[in-house]
Amino acid sequence: MPIDLEVNGKRVSVDVDPTTPLLWVLREDLALPGTKFGCGAAQCGACTVHVDGASARSCVLPISAVAGKRITTIEGLDGKFGAALMQAWTEQDVPQCGYCQTGQIMSAAVLLKEAAKPTDGDIDACMSGNVCRCATYVRIRSAIHRAAEIASGGGR
Image 1 (cartoon, rainbow, N blue to C red):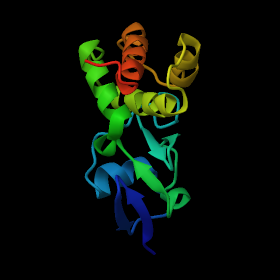
Image 2: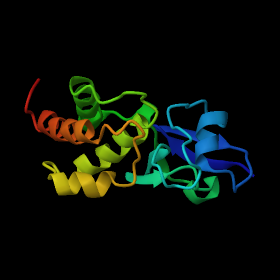
Image 3: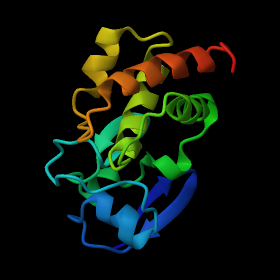
């Protein structure tokens, strides 16, 4: 039985086993490879997407649990927070290997929607579930502060 959902603003229907993790539907069935497989146990954050605006670990989320919901992947992240984060990530030279970055950015986007000017504590609490093997945590925090500034009109 097909499962209907909205991905990056487009209505889609997928005919997969309802227990299939959302991650694999996104990557394999919908050809959206930006969401990464990291640990498969919702512990590293590489697979983070937004489900109805909230962060979710797609590697353990069965597709049946998101039927009828709005899913946003890194490919669909736009608006002022998406643009601000992309600019800040580049300015602060955040990525090294880059593997975790989509999950980091997706988590940071939710934080910025909830806190216009997040503190270091806010950032640490929000980002604690996102692992960066290259340990660019200081640059990630700096980029989130910069993205908040950009999003609030704090310019180039």
